[in-house]
Length: 223
Image (tube, rainbow, N blue to C red; front, side, top):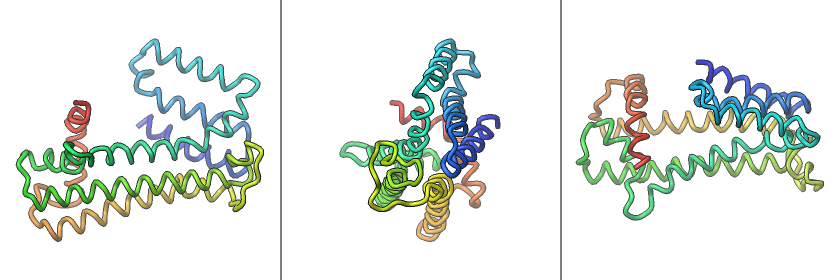
């Protein structure tokens, strides 16, 4: 719950830092980002996490910290979406099992899937990879062209197609997540039509089961 609150605060503060623009909010945004990344190890009282937190804060509050913060706030949406694109996309390589096929196997509790289901799982994996790549490209394009405070302006270049900084924030914080949510719902509805029998009763039961297989899926990915 605490980590969720930090994420919501981070999104709000980042939006204010870009729209106002505000050096103070930019620094607070990066502080929240560092806390989110290190939240688990900090909660477990890992010494390296506390040292990392102190080092990050020291770097932020030196002379160039404000300028660094103004640039860094544009990067997380791009990096997160690229990471998710890689997570799905690299499982499409030869001799690998598509990520969605791994999820289906865990949900169904069996390794032997039918050929149509495996083919569908590969297609859905490719679609998710494409969506995250699209989100990353749009976030980067808006970050480059954002006015004021965008990446090109910070580097001393005038963007050919300037866009309001709020447009970057609206897409990275809301628009991209709405697209992911729509993809999730539409794919679920279509899947129930072409594969009527499923081991879950409804959408909420599916969400519960999907959350339950999280540790097993992580262990499978780490192999």
